[in-house]
Image (cartoon, rainbow, N blue to C red):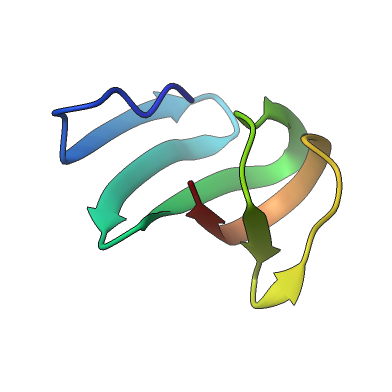
Length: 79
């Protein structure tokens, strides 16, 4: 995703043949909280912008390119 300056949030959903794909992010002080849903039987590849700190479902994540399996994912990205 691209967290543009001046934009406080963005949300998108798509009903695919495998289920709903969703992406929603919102600014919170000096970080961005990004929630992603990947439907069963699929995976997603994400590339994060440079950040001071990234938490993925509450755990530290050190890579900026990730493969997400099916499920719900919550990133907290400190800019």
